[in-house]
Length: 120
View 1 (cartoon, one colour):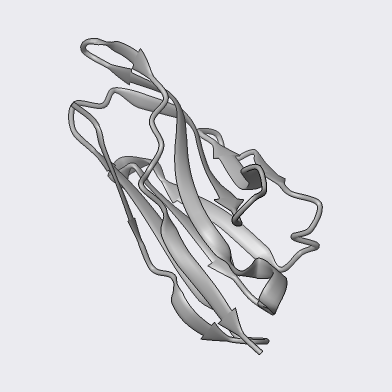
View 2 (cartoon, rainbow, N blue to C red; view 1 turned 90 degrees about the horizontal axis):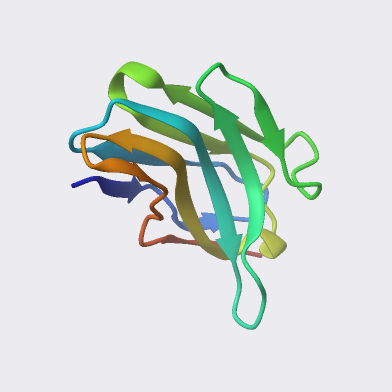
């Protein structure tokens, strides 16, 4: 069984920074893609950033160089460093693991989400 544990987030002042972590645990052989999505009430979940096992990254258009995603393959952990936060970044941030290879097959789980609130 694979568990996805998110940490970080909380209340941040406008213009400030915050770092989110996503740690996958359990019987894991490999994880193709690790990433973050976010969602606000009434809106669809949107891409924030993803990173492949080889380090290839993709970002949502709204990021504009403010966020950096990284991962530690040995720890099955991804990090999202966010800077220059503004009120529009307020959302629930979800960790997403794409194609996790386990002894029981391939799964793509989501984390439970962590709230990031940017105060103006």
